[in-house]
Length: 347
Image (cartoon, rainbow, N blue to C red; front, side):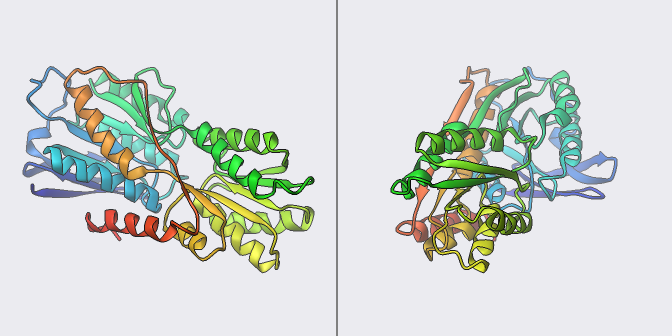
């Protein structure tokens, strides 16, 4: 099946629009740029389709600078190719660009997409755009991070609290012989409920495992911030022997700080499972990472968009698995990530 690629150019954010099936004609206009739009989708879609038709699916992610979302995008595109469904995947450059994400949802609300999946960075900023999409007859659901918005049909992604609990349990076992074990948690943005749920799960499991949580720090999923924060924490709390992070990038920064401090007895357990952190697991610099499956999330986005479009009932939550990555299976995990990205031409 032919792929038609579109670029949605914005003043401060660039989104990649990837569409399969159909020819390109017309323009998508935004406040800060334009992009080609397939001619069969130049008018607003408001439902009432024959079930033998296929939907035009829009997916709005959190960032293009995160390999996690590149993998989600790859899964969605691959499934769309298999099913002959058009899919458009867009996102701001950085996860912190919440206003840009809202702009993308609003723009998509006025396009001829039939179903919109959103990975919300900050739901409050999306309220108006989501309502606009609903008023325009779009089916809406969330991926990666659940929406509380009542118009959302379902959530596809990790059971964040339970995954965080598994992470905390594993970390606690690493120091179960230490009666005075203490931990710090480096988490993502305070307004992101995904990181909040992971934090709650980690804290509960560590405390159940008799590990004292001395600090929880918001490092905004930023590697440099995590490195600086970890450096300060090691000076303030030299007794720390466990670090849990709610994303890979912060684990990478924490590992650098720990190595620079010459600490040999601090365990790190990360979350997400992308290549850089998994490589540090492979060489023994990070103990383990709990890997999500964003590729499967992307694939399910297309499957469930089709179900909604055809009027089928869907469950409220569709949970994907997490996998424990340790030194023994890290290389195989990295190879599988790269294979999935390479089949879509993504590096």
